[in-house]
Length: 242
Image (cartoon, rainbow, N blue to C red; front, side, top):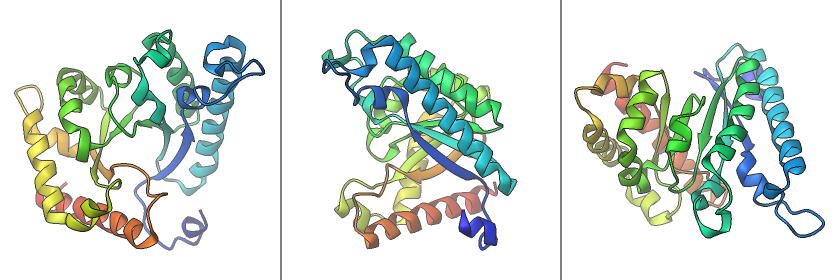
């Protein structure tokens, strides 16, 4: 925020982030050692608190007169459908996400989500979310199984944030370069193109991102991830003229 206040760099948008309701509720327990996820009162409190936090972030970040995107981080949804969460329905998750997203929209922001691994992506495609961020470097094949849902999402104006720059394995971070990642991304996109989804549409409604966060990386590796992300994005914009 200090850099934006000093106008040291030109930004296309400003990003905020919160822990997603499912992920937080799956980590909290009550006095009886029961997950807060299964307590209706605690669930309501947590969801409303997160929604208000997200709304507050939009209000604070809007001072820079740039589009604001708040990402709802849901790493625990990689376990959705497993025996640990067998009693949690897709409707439960959709309802929680919708409440948070509605507060983000109310404040004038865009609502996005990120899952570190694979999940049931239909949870998001049919939601009111504006941006879906996934690990395209590792999990594209599974994401592509939801192609028809993806087409509908893009048709309504949704944006896909492609986590094409690796962050999990230092060898991959060191071994890849902008050219190899652009080639990888183009190969993935071409698998999705059809009569109902053009290459240009995908280009226009895509963002290039790291596959996940860089908090566990050394500073040099984190810097390389950021540099690769910028380089891949710049190459694609140059090649497509978008």
